[in-house]
Length: 252
Image 1 (cartoon, helix red, strand yellow):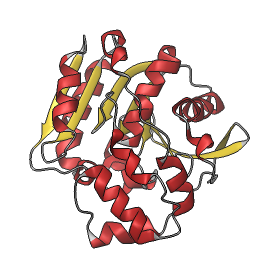
Image 2 (tube, one colour):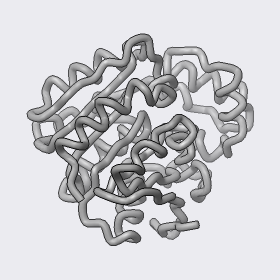
Image 3 (cartoon, one colour):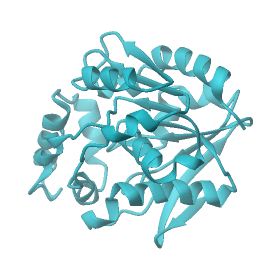
Image 4 (cartoon, one colour):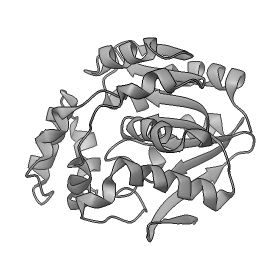
């Protein structure tokens, strides 16, 4: 079971398949296993060496309860620790939601380590919706989920609520209190091939589509009828454009 060390903390990752390196970064309250559960890994590993990490605070990675551990720069360093552990100089990067935010962090702090960028349901504009987590400690799961629903602007299903409750909620509450300042100054600098996707029932759809239009080499895919949580649950919608994009632009 591989782990990379980043700032003295363990970051867990899984590897499957062979081919050009593709790193998958999941969303908030999820884990690396979501990619496998929703059908991404089985398909992608037929063409790529798939590296799926557990973000700090999630899955099998360490779970500090200090918000200062979860800065965007540190999350970027966590990704780089995994790449360095594997001896990978450059990566095809795919991130969803939180993973998309970290993708913009990679552009900010480690642009030279990216071949391509695939981001789902994430934009680079200031996002004050995360202020809903101010004062949330994670000790009250109902309050945590209510704050998360406020961030998403959508209801969370009972099944997903059960999965969220299984997390270390104090760690995730600490992570959620990190601010999300604007990074749209990066858009003109993202000169690498980029694919952005978002459900049209996701409150972030307009922002993601607008940001993609400003990218020199950006491609946008709208997922009909898909909510924020649904974006990673509908691999049948996401995989075809993802595979076509990677087939054209990915590198070893």
